Length: 638
Image (cartoon, rainbow, N blue to C red; front, side, top):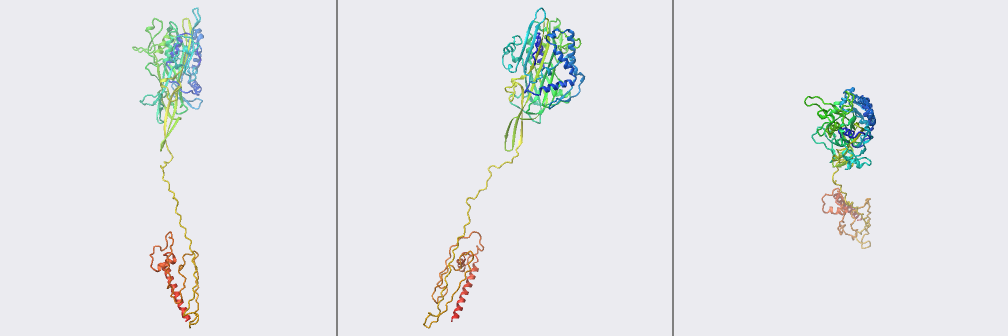
């Protein structure tokens, strides 16, 4: 924001500081590219509620500063005051209608609520959406100019133009030491860190008795089923530091007039791109008051209130505008050189009679059209000093559905555990400006603030090395595994080692064909001796060998060569059974018991015991047939 030239001296500074101290709350996180759209939305909302005239009036009032303010007449001041009052109360005509949803022109739908205007004498014009359009402002801009304009002398009384950054606030240097060319005076001798507001975010479950967690140790665990309260804490004591320092600019500063005061605050809270969830969307004014609360954290009176009619609500972002509210201030003794000042009170009520004391808002009086004798720097200083130095803003009904950053997966045999994180950002910006006038000098002062992260509550995850006000949340989800459980070391079938191959049958030996038998002589020799020649009998053997020859019947029988007269088979050598190879497998009749004699012969002939009786019968018939044949032949020869 621009630095404004201030003229008068401490009064201007004091005024500004006072305004600042009252409002500030939580500070911000990441820069939000939608800030401009939000500002435009807020402006649209104000216009819709009938505040267009107010905005125009406030703008006109803000222009009347500096030297121009010094030259204005009382009539001009009166006119200005009337306009300012009209601006403050311009929304009264809207009444207390319940919230109406509007579209911001962006991706999200923005909800607003209507609120009746307050008494303009209890507040001051607020153009924060115009003066500080950037939600991401951090640090403090100081502009104080005061010059001698009467009494025969001219020249500067005090000129201060400086911007104290978030980085400057980390050191121990003074404003003058860290800003080349800035004159040293009662204001610039302050340390940078003593003029910058600080904030912190914390979270807990709604209606829980647990303490708020600022996540300065670890991310805060959240569950999808629960709703949460987000709290923004702000230390606004730096405003009081500036006001108190300004009192030493010149003697008699308590009597310096403070006029055309403007002030206001705006706090925005945004769910990061890695968070899926929603802030509470109010249905009407009472619902908004229930879920969004501004209060004192140190027991001192609050001098700011949420203007719900100028605030906006959406699922991912909430923007809360705060106005000056002098109705809660306790009674203060009147300051100044007036002889009756010590016996007079401003603000609050008489504890005995209950009668309200005058309220000083440092603007033109609605009743007289002029400034009261109480519109002096001394009273502004007392107002700021006695108001809350620690304030807090609580937002209830926050729902978190999922987070997506820093994904970590762990697995067991049956399930997968997924851990993810997300961040929430908070910002607080504000301003105060006024005109100052003293016996021989005039001027103006302007302060613009943007809170930075309180180091003690710095977020452990996303806040390290970061001056933005951030808070990290964490979610755990468990997914059952879909893959079947595999057996441990399953038994594999054993392959046979070198399986035994069946034995091949031995090639059978082809039997020798028996020689033809020699016909024996019957009854003597072939010649003489009275003997008779015998006819030779030839026996033909028909071979009927099988296609796969085995042991032939009678294969080992010796060839008959006995002399004449020998009995058939008389000298026959007993057959010897040849060793046979054991057959594999079951053979028909294998278990049949062997029979002596014929069985042995059958074994010699066949090589096994199969059909032993049949073979024996055939063999006996053959022998009987052969014997009969021989006998018949002999008879024929006789």
